[in-house]
Amino acid sequence: MLSCKPRVPSEYIQPGDMEDILYDYHIAQAMAENLELNDDQHDFKQTLYFAAVLEKHGVTKAEFDSSLVYYYIRADRFGDMYKRVAKRLADEALEQGASEGAVVHYAQVNNSGDTADIWKGNLSMMLIPYAPYNRYDFVQMPDSTFSKGDSFLFMVNSEFIMQNGVRNSQAVISMRYDNDTIVSKNITIGSSGITQLMIPEVANRKVKEIRGFIYMPLEKEMTTTMKLMAIKNIRLIKFRKKEQPKDSVATDKKQPIDTLKTKTL
Image (tube, rainbow, N blue to C red; front, side):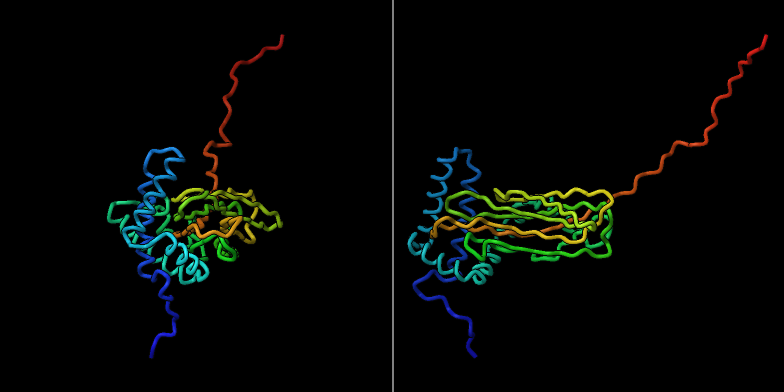
């Protein structure tokens, strides 16, 4: 039986070749970001590096742009492709001795105990600046491990792949408590790497519902310029409020006796 999965038309870059181009482009972008240049010089270097990647693979910018549009509107296929790219990049980073930093610190945290990873959504995803693929929403309900005074830490490890433009995405978390009070926190994801959003405790209140989303703003005009954000290793760490230690000072300590006697004349 032949596979029913549709093939990519021959006028577009094939998936394996596109994956190699994205991988090489990511490496070139990282090289450009490590240079100590001003913004104009940085953009110029990025453009040169990207042109070198296309030349290496024998692809013109027009061919790349048209292929990118083809994959953009087939986000599921593009997402699978980028997962493979992300794995190659991660494997390469580990071979070079890289560390995931704070993510590693919580990587072995389970879903119980005073410090627990309670994330139940997708661990990784890809966002592009076109609806509906530019936003990821999630809802989580509490379980028996939640207590009054819990605090939370939301963490994402992001990678931007783009030719030019502004790295500007948002992460928003809203906590609904047992008295229906809602506390919302947001943070800008403006660079590749680890982004952390702390949600402090609300005294004597227990979380009733957790909602949030990660959002990449829509482009004002449709463009073929590449811009995407890959997210991996999402964590939502819950910290249980520690009990205050009891006062060690004895309350029944005897007061010194005044031995001075006063005579009445």
